[in-house]
Amino acid sequence: MAKRNTWQREAVREALGGNDGFISAQGLHAELRDTGSPIGLATVYRALSDLAVEGEADSLQSPEGENLYRACTPGTHHHHLICRNCGLTIEIEADEVEAWARSVASQHGFTEAKHVVDVFGLCENCSAAAQRA
Image (cartoon, rainbow, N blue to C red; front, top):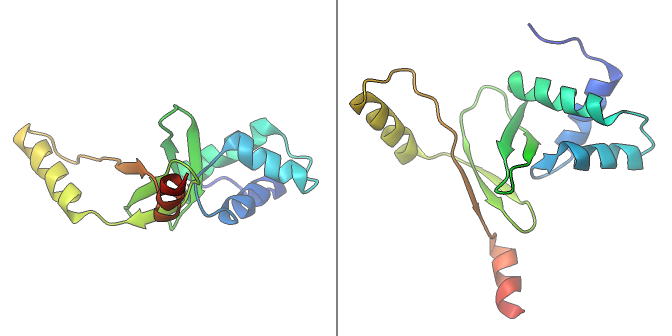
């Protein structure tokens, strides 16, 4: 059952959609506050969690253990390439990963297996900048 839309939830949805990469709840809250929004941090956390459960946002854990969120196309299974430096995120399909996950699950008697694959690295621009430094 979908939660009802409130102005706070809509503000979080719009702010999330305005970001190109993944962002933390604290980062999104700071962006909203910078625009004059009175929304509370706990409300941002709840809205992001609800959006992730409903498939309107991707959620992942950064290498540092922080939950990050990104607006996504509902109903599509995809993976991500994520720049550790600038946060650039690219949605990718990974047919080989899909086949491997089904095969490994089947070998061990598992059915209805789900998985999450996110690849962290440096994007082309950040790699070039690091080489120049």
